[in-house]
Amino acid sequence: MSVAAKTQLSHEQIKPKIGQRILNSKEELLSGELAGELRELLEQRGILLFPQINFTTEEQVAFTETLGTFAPEGGDGRDVTKITLDVKENPSSAEYLKGSLYWHIDGTRNDVPILASLLTCKVPSPKGTGNTGFCNTYAAYDDLSDADKARYEDLHVMHAPWASLFYYEPEPSLAKLKMMQSIGEKELPLVWTHKSGRKSLVLGCTSRNVIGVDPKESAEIIVGLREWATSEQFSYSHEWSVGDLIIWDNTGTMHRAEWYDPDCGRMMLRTKLEGEEAWA
Ligand code: OGA
Ligand code: MN
Image (cartoon, rainbow, N blue to C red; front, side):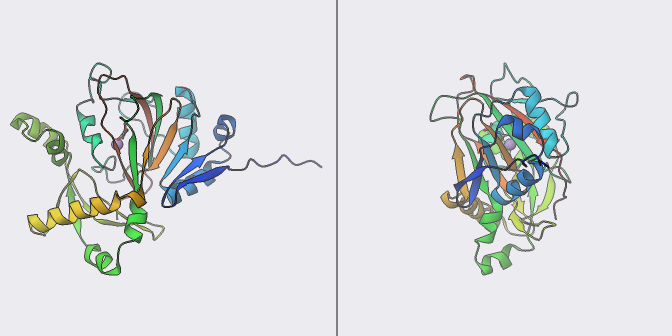
């Protein structure tokens, strides 16, 4: 009796504390057979890179659906979102995406944050610009000293998109400030204890202040932990080639776009997976 060979997941490490490169074919990935193992590896490694996998838009949506629940982003259902700072291509959200040039977690206002985002490169920016940086906030927590772990254990941080406005526009109009404030804010734990028992740091440019701590110390904590979590050992900067796809575990990483000229044509397509676990 012949038994069909099970598809093997083929992968290699990018850096010791972040990132795994997946080497399976498009067909193997779209079969869904590897979905369970990919989900596990994503949680362990923070990001998965599929070099020049060249998914079409439909294939990206189909692949996303093999991994969990497709999270629609506005508009109508199962579609990809254009990610570009070019206002001509992205009139509704190019402005808001300016905040994506600073380390962040997607959707900090949601009770259940997005599980993961999948980004495909359609048009890269000129070499030396427009990389995407990622850092592993599980690994950054794990490597803190016991004293620091104890210090941060019970702290909470107010997260607000309006806090990130000041990164790219230090002197906004009152109208713009109020517009950003109307998006909302949310108090989140600084250390997220996941259902698995693992812990990660919850940081990013939406961090407005540590609750109940004086402003100077609050800024020291937020800046100091960002510097730590994004240091070389925990981070990886990806230089995009056409057709590359990266998935990041939005619950255990931060990411940011590195500077690029908004008019250079850089075009990325994003899909998202619905979150499965509330902040805790
Ligand atoms: C995002 C994002 C970064 C980039 O899509 O959420 O932050 O490099 N993108 O475009
Ligand atoms: Mn983002």
